[in-house]
Length: 167
Image (cartoon, rainbow, N blue to C red; front, side, top):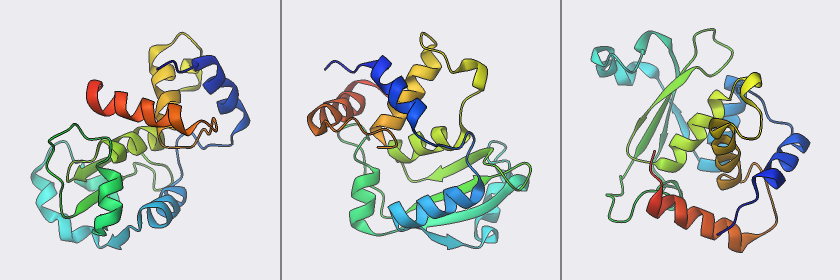
């Protein structure tokens, strides 16, 4: 597998992607791409006890239970992983406008990559040679924000990620 980071960067420069994402953009993507249904945040009151969930800043909660969508969401999980029946995705926002974090219930590496993209990357880090930025470009490619038109390379990159690279 040979993924050309320079080409990903070129394509990145030509796409219009928020950095970080607005909550409205996340809502649209989750509902359109993953058939997510919005739930009342209060259904997740148990997260008040979780110091990592930052419950006070959770502004949206979504659930995904369509088995076909869940199969897609677990497609980047390591072989042998348990497939959840439901995946919940809770969105944090410290300002009520932009994404600032999330909690995922039900293992989905793909949704974890989406979360990384939703959070964006600092402008000063957007330089080739910066490992974090290059990883961000690969995430954009894996989730088809960047399209190279090469399905074989995308499939190989997903297999590599699934089998050898873990978050």
